[in-house]
Amino acid sequence: MAEIAVEDGMLVVTMHGADKLWALKSRLEVPLIHVKGAGIDPDFIRRERCRGIRTGGTSVPGVITAGTLRQHGDWVFWDVHDPEKAVIIELADERFARLVVQVDDPFATVAVIQRALGQG
Image 1 (cartoon, rainbow, N blue to C red):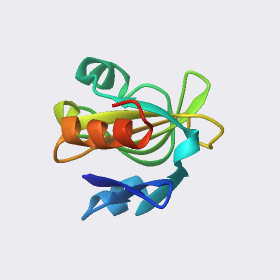
Image 2 (cartoon, one colour):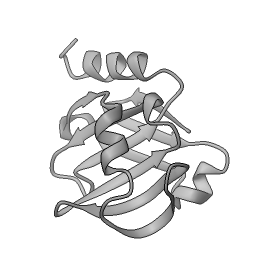
Image 3 (tube, rainbow, N blue to C red):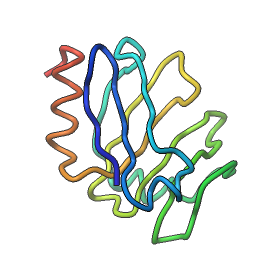
């Protein structure tokens, strides 16, 4: 699971527990000006979670998708066990086109990101 915060103009994603190992990352930082938006779409996550070419991390269908995947021509970072608790963060001008991460409260997380972007 990950924790998402907005600090000093940056979106900070911190992986906790074993997810640091599964995803091969413990923290990602993205300037807010590169964050296009955030949303929740469990059906999209279920459909896409095992598609693409995994270049690092862990993938056990139906259990966990964590790490870097090449999907539809884009690099995407995943850290998801339960699609119902995941958020999708769209990025521009970054290595990753998208971050798909599981959090404690997806609705609150999306609200925090949208407020920081002036969208909420």
